[in-house]
Amino acid sequence: MSDVMIEARDLTKKYGPVTALRDVSFEVRKGEVVGFLGPNGAGKTTTMKILTCFIAPTEGQARVNGADIFDDPMKVRESIGYLPESTPLYTEMLVLEYLQFIAKMRGFTGEEARKRIKKAVEQTSLEDVIAKEIRALSKGYRQRVGLAQALVHEPDVLILDEPMSGLDPNQAAEIRELIKQIGEERTVILSTHDLAEVQVTCSRVLIIANGRLVADDTPDELRERAGKASYQVTVLAKEGAYRDSEQSKAVRDALGKIGGVASVRQREAEGKDELLFTVLPKSAEDIRAEIFQSAVDGGFVLLGLEKKAEALDKVFRDLTTGDTEELSAREQKKAEARARKKKRDAAKKADAKAEAKKAEPKKTDADADDGDDAEKEEA
Image 1 (cartoon, rainbow, N blue to C red):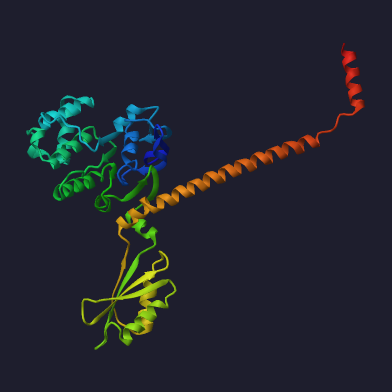
Image 2: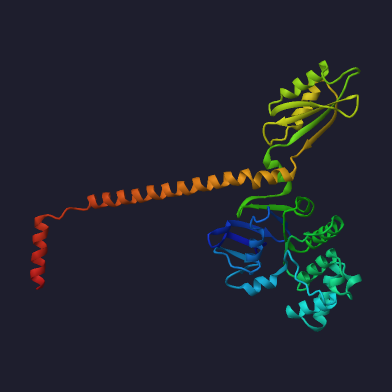
């Protein structure tokens, strides 16, 4: 049995002349917590609405827990717990009344409804406010109520659209921890533009820009893929050594001779008995072993060696600005290549047809006469 819980293939959504989503494809497997990342207007919410059967794609297809969004939308809805960006709550209701209403809407009554509500309340830590009116709750608790309504029917998939929107740092931290706990039991897609949420909460990241999927990796893999990690090297300074001393030059020269090193820069060290260098590599290949060996061969004492990956926010900016333009150019080149191939195939087909026609035996006058005689005999 497949463990793929969400499968999207070539999803495209057009609103008149505007294309909000273009050929988006991805898979989410059972037990994954996936961050769906992108700037405002990138297409995150459109994708969420397609997966939850709120809207239909113009092109493409999607399946949730084995159910097709076109063929079996009710089963898709049964499999999903959805928390939209603006949590739709009946604020005049008590928390318990609201959850009872949601359970009834989901088809649960009596003891079954009570069990499910109790479990959702415990998961979202709503015990202290269960008898309060929703309008009297803080923003953080309202988000918890929204999560509880998404969990009442115990779905296999949880889709959260900007769940930390409008929360203060303490409230956001609480909801983030709650999502991590929920993710231990369910498949979660977390739509956001907050990088902190992704780094702390998610095991995998999908990045969308201008309606296109531009990345599908773990946070660490994204930083590695950028190929711009640097290495901070701390060396024990000899007595009397300083920034431009002979020792500093010797260390810079030794590090610069490493094959995978692009450049070496010396920085101000915090301690007086330390020399600090930043080593920039030529590629994403890890060169810490080479740096260590260089220290051994050069006879200088290595006090520290740290690989500093590029911040995820820098990778995010690269992928959602400059890289998007490159992607568009690549897509255009692919389209042109497909058109050229189609033209070549058509030409080859025409040539083959012409060759086949030439290879056909020519009809002689004798053949024509024989055919006429046969027709006369039949008559």
